[in-house]
Length: 320
Image (cartoon, rainbow, N blue to C red):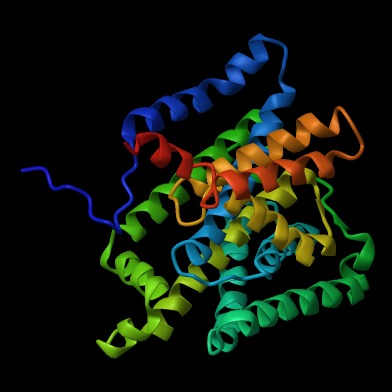
């Protein structure tokens, strides 16, 4: 007998998902055939930001933790990869592992402190930590300081497989993005994910019935930070450059805008938000230098017409 998904479950919708995956797998070949290889790099960037936005949605949309310092984990992951490269290590697996562990460790420290507060205090503490890290990296002249850190080459996967071309790097990004997305989906449908969402809805009641609220929130916070660190390492590799500006509050705000656009608390919210934000940025910036104005108008329209994000429109259309 097939069980119906509960209110806290998040089904994958396999048919459209597989169609999208097949299209993404075929993209490099199609782009090359059409002489539009540039778009392989564009879609790689979208997938990286989708990964980062999904990690933020894990704590914002499903855990109720409004973090304004999420870009700090992206920046730490990027610097971990960049510093590793500067010291002569070019293994992509080592860079990704170090970025994951470094961002997770930082998230554990920040979460252990900030999660003892709530509301605006939590927002301000996460923002303060991110700004502290930003000024720390600005002051470290060994690693470029305010000028940033340049990567003199790209990472390699070993076994003679390099990432100097856009297509191999794209497939690595795609594999990681799909893997992270499936991990988050499985996590949300597990007992831990159900408890996390229940804590978001009523933290006091969950604590009263014996759930370790603080521990659950800290685990989610650490995982979200680690996944953001992976996105940071990929960004460093793609751009060949790491800058303290990656940790600024404006970058955290951008990730939050992506989640709000797609839909806070929707499984596909981070992915849809990253696609819409970056496609609009690419399109509007080609028309006017004041593209932020147009993007702000779109965000305002989404907030007014679909307060729960673009994905909530689908539920409105289904409603009788």
